[in-house]
Amino acid sequence: MKKMNKIAVFGGNVAGSKFLELKVVADKLGVELDLISFKELAFETETGKVFLRNHEIGDYDVYFFRNNKTYWEETSLILDQLGEDKIIIDPIIKRGRQSDVCKAHQMVVLSQAGLPVPKTIYGSLKFLKKEDITKFEFPLIIKGSRGDRRRQVFKIYGQKDLKEKLEEIKEIEKMGENKYMLQEYVVNSKDYRVMVVGGKVLGVMMRAIGDNPRLKDVFEKSDLPEEIKVMAVRAAEVCGMAIAGVDVVFRDDEITKPLLFEVNKTPNYTRFEEVTGLKVAEEVVKFLAEVGNEGI
Image (cartoon, rainbow, N blue to C red):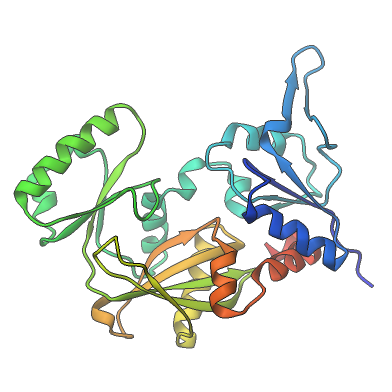
């Protein structure tokens, strides 16, 4: 019988449900899995030692950085202590570049891979030119490259609306809090979350969406044609993610017009499990327990 990996899962708030569900599942499966907060990390100049307060840093086979959006410095320090025999989830973590998980970078690598994405222009809005705007029709979208899908996404209906929003965003950019991109508005009534683990599609969830933020979204178990699921797996691969939630929409709700909206490194398993009946956390733990360096 193949020996199962000992797993370290890193995050900020490891007491949150996103982490605890992995620990609960691992215990049920008899898999050694520790939840480790980045706040445990320490460094001593006298010895040059980087260490964890409550765990041995090199005591694991697999290192899964579940959420390191604001902990890239800590992630780099940990990676520097690990040998070549250690398995790092995901490939983007190995590269150690924060840009790899921002939405703008995703649009670039997906489009360069020949995958369909919405028309997008990224760059400081301070230098946005009139000819850039003429490439879009109203309404259009202004989207934060690191914000979430609700709080940093703005639908712009016309020139007056655009001017006011640009002035607001330029002030935010000055403080270095976010960068923004222009993106075409894609007419659709629903989107699809494709859950990918280890190069395989676990399942698909549909979300019916609307412009009114007061109305609750409707979630349903769904499916997609095989070629769309293959596209989702490829999207996760080119974005350097072994575990990902890939968001797909269809222009005008036509199945022949797919677009990749986002590849999420830290998808929420709970909602997906409730809607689809699939045991995502269990599949993730099994993948981490059995994966070898050739599997990522």
